[in-house]
Length: 175
Image 1: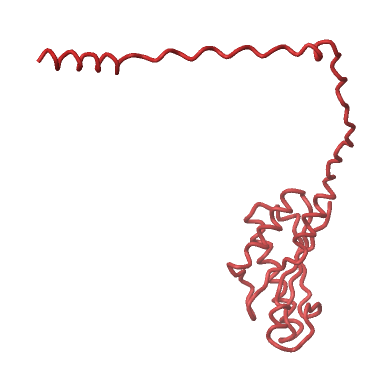
Image 2 (image 1 turned 180 degrees about the vertical axis):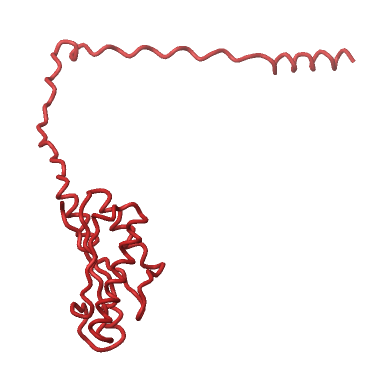
């Protein structure tokens, strides 16, 4: 039993011993040549100041991005469809950001009488105006006009052309 106890005690003590810490690293030699030479002067780079975009240029850039936006309507209808609300909200944002005036031009296809199409074009422009007013654009900054069938976008006489002509156009003006 003593023979067993002594080797187990030795093994236990050997396992619990801690290793010696590694020696500290040697300090790096100081460069003597660099200490004698003066530091180079800082390099100055001349940059051209960035010109800020003028408010009118920003307005023109945003207006150009939305120039092709129109609100399209179904035949003989003046209710704004849900897929057309993006154009209205984007032009409302533009009007609110730059306090510009907006003219809404109501248009119709060639079917129907001149008087009927003028009245329908006016109702279409007024519907877009009411949506923009609900989005926060002051009512007195929005004008509406109807061109009826007098200003077609497409000249052919079939349904796909007529669908392009049933619209309300935005004319944003710098104020």
